[in-house]
Image 1 (cartoon, rainbow, N blue to C red):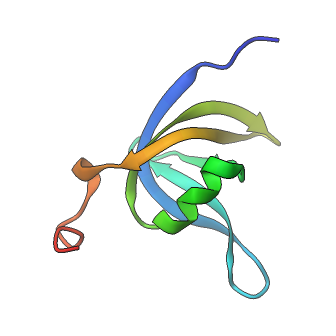
Image 2 (tube, rainbow, N blue to C red):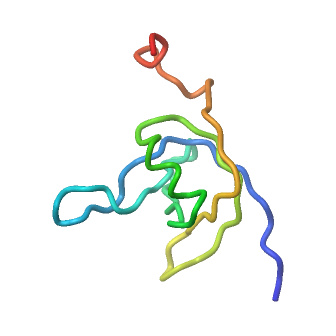
Length: 90
């Protein structure tokens, strides 16, 4: 089987799925390329639930799941370039 290449994406973490009680159950990254990519619910990806609405840079491997692009995140960091004026005071 072919090894997937490591990629880097920049964008905003957004909620993409909800439990019946309103709790967020899935995340996407809305890339600066105006495309959405699902974040895999694996150990590193789950850490991104704390960063909803934050600009990030993620590195990982992309896979397809039911015709949807899914990123298996290996590492991430906040993207200071993508921060807004409202975030500057935080």
